[in-house]
Length: 448
Figure (cartoon, rainbow, N blue to C red):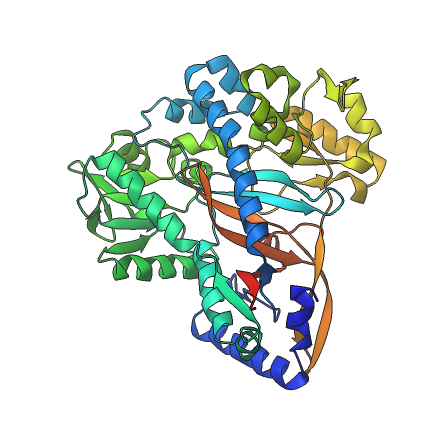
């Protein structure tokens, strides 16, 4: 019997109703919401075996190595760096020193399981302080107290996959490298007042407090840089756990804003800093997979790239290759709409994405023209996997398939540290895009 079926068999109407009531109560009590919506709407976490988790960790480590090599070359080679599509102001900020070891101390890779091959397809590298780790841990705590999990634990050993500690550890490691010591920092968690992730900031604030560290939450527009110190909530701060996106900060406040100037002067440590933009750009996947760059990678790198990165190119008038044959990129894109997706080089929440198989030819042609005029990538369509998930609807149990993604959190660009799974019945699996559910992941092993 599969793990999923073993869980579902325990969901009698009584157990399902009690589990639903507990989850709803805990989500409300702990403010586990995103933009006013409950974070989790199903009655089962994601269940994985230890062998599956270890294999995922191996694959994540394998694809991170060429990412690290690409960034190192981008630091030294402006012509190579141009492939990532940094804007002029981003180039200006990139010239400032990288004051800790890795450009993205905390990041997240967005994969899709590929049922036909058993592999993983990497569609985005969220290298700029991604959301979700603290939410996932809080949801795991919620599920640990459900009746169905207690019943399941009689026959299966169950282990959560913490994610928040990895984020916090990476942030503090960057601070130690930045400061050259172990002095405890005062931390500012910075983002706009009205963002839907506010409750996650509060979870981090509470976690920092358990470590004896003071953290304040503030809008960067209220921060002040004076006398060589950055102030948030009226207090001098040493370390920024940055959740506001760099491009939104600069576009809203400008390059001479107090936060930007303090970071450039080295008066405050910001994680993730401006150098993360190179790997965060969606063009980073094009750089890795483009045959023009193959010579910089070894055989293991190339195998990982081939196995995990779908065919991706920066949209431009050029010739390239597709599955071993030469193609003229733009005519190829127009002819192969059904297998391609267009994505802006630097956006989030599913904004600006055009799925070729969901639009007609004229709409696709217009999207291609738009992509030629602005930084965009074109990527080959990947399989979207699905699993059955139970939910409690109008007083009864319903089980139906939901699409899901696989998004491991990454520490210092080196290894997997926790896992985000998002569920959806829509084509874009993105909670920010307006739907779906988040679930925690548990490592499960049948008891002997």
